[in-house]
Image (tube, rainbow, N blue to C red):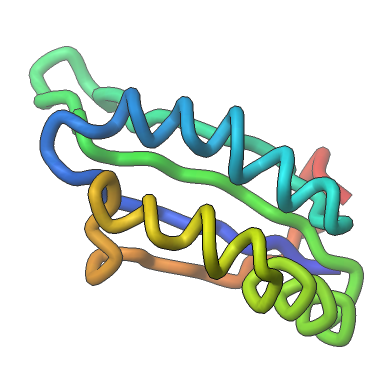
Length: 113
């Protein structure tokens, strides 16, 4: 089992729209195809003197194996719904050049298994 930590930068002023789109459209669609979404998060300030990252969005998905990830990626990203209805709406809200995807594995002390 592994997780995919996905860090996004939204276009200025678009984070609330992006979160709404994720939670009302993208996440339900991906879950309907079998994806397991562990969490969806807005970036917040780390310290009182730090500026809030108003454009950061993070989400986490879980996969049981690489073959499952490949199968689910195909089911989602090659579907007519994704290609024709979902993907075209993304560039207005998200800076796709700044997407950072990190594969992570929980350690024994993690509550996520």
